[in-house]
Amino acid sequence: MEEGNKTSVKEFILLSFSDLNDFQILFFIVILVMYLVCVFGNLVTIILARTLSSLQLPMYFFISVFSALEILFVCVTIPKLLVNLIVDEKYISFAGCFTQLFMYSSFGATECCLLAVMAFDRDLAVNTPLHYRNIMTEELCVELAVIPWFFGSGMGLIPTMFMLNLDYCGPNIINHFFCDLAPLQNLSCSDALSSQLTTSIVAAFGCVGPFIFIMVFYFHIVYAVSKIRSVEGKTKSFSTCSSHLIVTSLFYGTVIIVYIRPRSSQHDKYLALIYTVVVPFLNPFIYALRNKEIKLALTNICHHSFYQWSP
Figure (cartoon, rainbow, N blue to C red):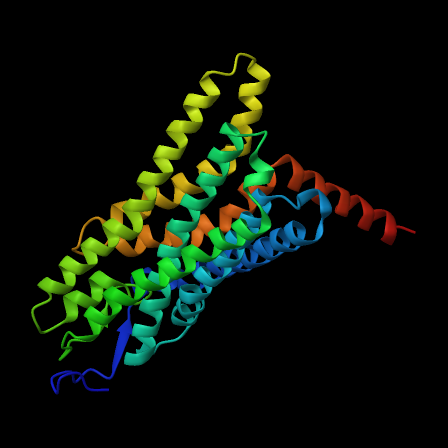
């Protein structure tokens, strides 16, 4: 592929974690286990949320959509990381690199927006409990679940197109485990100022924007809960938000650190591991252990399976 008759790079080399040397096999096993647990855990969450009558509520509908997004999100980067940990030639094609960049950026922005939608759902449930079911109809839930995907696609497409307009003459070595914005910008042999500015604007709009909405919704929730007199009522209201709040805090805690800065650092790939591997691995456990309905559903299924297979 040739861009503006100046791009000579046909492929990129992802260094991944080559600096770990003999520990790469151990690292491969750890990442593989976390990846499989993440995919399996999110699949179980989706199946439970879509099949059990006790979980046919808007909150669990959004959780199932979020779980599906998590599976797609980890599948963009982790399989390639696993391959690079056990092979010597760590290549990715030019087209493959930018496809990965687009999908990763799109799913990341979609997750930011979806977390804001889920915060809105919890705000509505806490502040208008009597009218909640009438407002959050099935049609509205579907519309609110679709919006983040369109939003994320736009947020992923804009910086990717700007990156494609840059020239890549060499070198082609990326000190990361996937094709991310900042490492690619650093490899460009043309002026990347416009691309860096666009990346910062998109990151502010696509990441910080939804975060501000989340904070506003939770301030509204805290204000509403503070007016509840009984301790039991306050605990019940906060318990419906706790899982979402923990997931949001874990995700944004590392994403903001990495993407608010346009320049890359040698530590970015280790920070990226947290929100691309560790957080998706923890999310199914957070929703299962912090949610009484899902925990009860899992317990009932385990008991039923035990008695069915016991002699």
